[in-house]
Amino acid sequence: MLQVIIDKDVCVACGACVLSGPDVFDQNEDGQAVLVVDEPGESLRDQILESIEACPVQALSLVEHAAAATE
Image 1 (cartoon, rainbow, N blue to C red):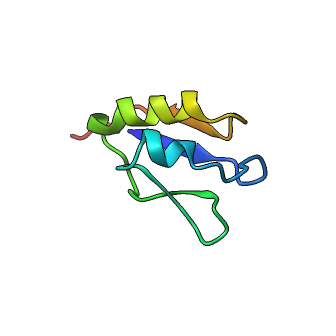
Image 2: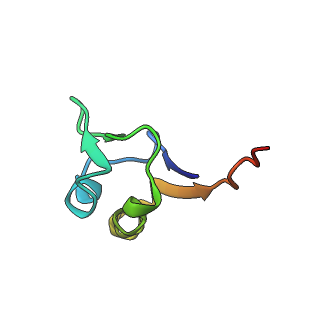
Image 3: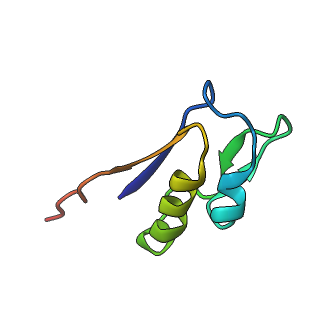
């Protein structure tokens, strides 16, 4: 499972994440980054990574969690 973390204390509301990952990110009324998906799937990985790279203040990060084993 992919988890995107947005550090609101660092975000400067430039919108680079929205341009790089429009299926993942949007901006709130203050211009800060917000997620438009609760649990981004593997198909959005490229957009997430591009947005992380585009962020000028490194406010975004990606954490990968192992899938829970089901019996």
